[in-house]
Length: 230
Length: 230
DNA sequence: TTAATAGTGTCTGTCAGACACTATGTG
DNA sequence: CACATAGTGTCTGACAGACACTATTAA
Image 1 (cartoon, chains in turn red, yellow, brown, blue):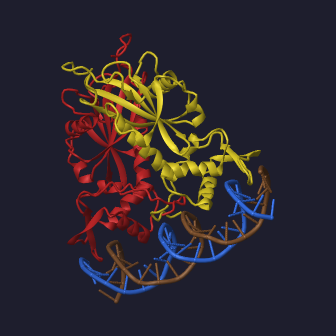
Image 2 (image 1 turned 60 degrees about the horizontal axis):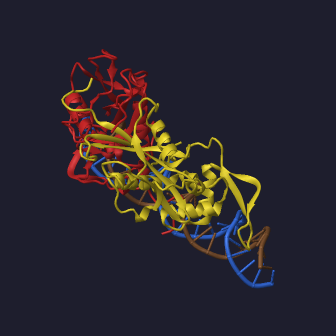
Image 3 (image 1 turned 180 degrees about the vertical axis):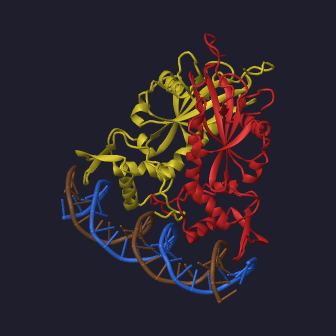
């Protein structure tokens, strides 16, 4: 068992919870109610409850439920931050997850203890929470280049143009419509909703799509760019 | 501070240490000397020592040093495994790293308590160590497709043909020589060793290369395949 | 009819893969 | 010389990006 000359690290879970409002990526912040950093806005997080949580993912789910009133969004482990000095209470470990939710779910989380902040405007956070946020943003943007991750930011049904706008907002660059649609089609993660169209103005209505059930992670990297022979 | 109705999780670090012997990827296993699983071969790991380690990476470095006699190979965080049942002693967290070393370093780790096992022949390991090994293999193979990660398996100097054989061993598929050399050149992580050639037989000697100092991670994903406009 | 966005047809430059060719050592 | 591997020149099919074109609605 552990060395007794010093206490064991304590273990927490933090969650970078992201949504897209309009063209703007926003992150959830909660008001800390105890020291250290009481009264500061931080990423939602908390202790692991060994009696209650099966594992750290379970703890992340519980934290999303209790701090933001959300259940089962896209949730994935990001990184584990640890060290003697990241928290003034001593040697600590934070297993960090990131979650993506559609705006409709984010709007259903009104609370004095939770707010949504545009990620570009978050310049400082307590502990090492800013590094966590930045790593999550980097991961999401990187996955946007080659996967269908951003579909988790979309509402139940959406048009391909709306999805393209989301990709463009995440990448900060315009995309070619033809290439975008080809790629989304190839990923095979969305399907038409037969007969459903969006008509938001004086123009042709758009076919609506939804995420396929049991859609695979769609992370399959092509065996290319290295000369892999078939 | 933590809820006192149950003890806090305990925190360990495990390392998937990989090298390539010939065409065969091998992983380091160490003999456990205490319960549970005393006498079993497991991944090298150990408790975090809060008084000694600055952070978990520091603990991984210490574990490599004390269990394998190695220092500062390529070392990167892989994933954190946690839960109530993965270790019979209770709710536990393992922050897992993976490391790559050249064969010459691996050969310098002779010990009755450490052995090298071909990864394809490892069918069972205690705790959840097999899942850790499999995730590390998956990560290494995936990064092989688009990065220069495998250079860390190479000796100080090496020819491009040798490097290609390593890539082929990792991917389990033959690569096209021209495409491979183009790609390695584009990655810009190796440089010629002027005047150094390998002459292992009755044929033209090969230019030797080494990893560039301060070579960037070379993980820059191209902004392509989505129609990103310049 | 106009305006505005949805969606498609199709060309073209680029480049990964294929592969033949040259280069250069040993025996 | 033959032989084996190192290294290069170059063609080609596929495909990402460009972009113009058609489709379809509301006003």
